Image 1 (cartoon, helix red, strand yellow):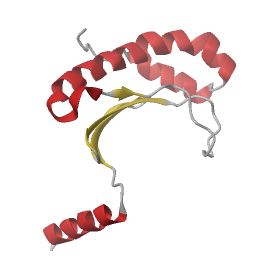
Image 2 (cartoon, rainbow, N blue to C red):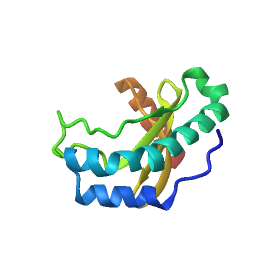
Image 3 (cartoon, rainbow, N blue to C red):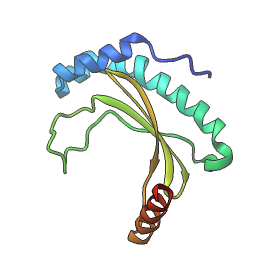
Image 4 (spheres, rainbow, N blue to C red):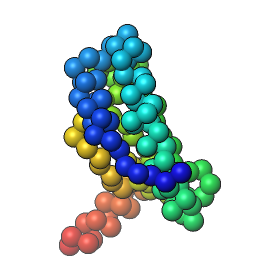
Length: 131
């Protein structure tokens, strides 16, 4: 399967979901659109990125997040995310992030430090470069 892009209806889905984010609305009106216009293209993109970065990331591949929001620790209690995200871990603390929402597609690199010593080394390196 080759990634062919996201249809404009994917962005409209998130516009609609931002104004009508409840479980019943999702089940009746948004679920089929999500699977066709968002999830299927994101799975295609994830497969291509996983193949491209396999040398660095190994066979784990790209992780595509689900549509349900974890509300346990969140102030936002709406049941569904208003974005579709996917990430790829390249190293234990380095990764890539892809994010689709009503504004479009966003991609970034991520650095997730696991310990205070790593944060200190990173800050020292940044200060040294700026120095």
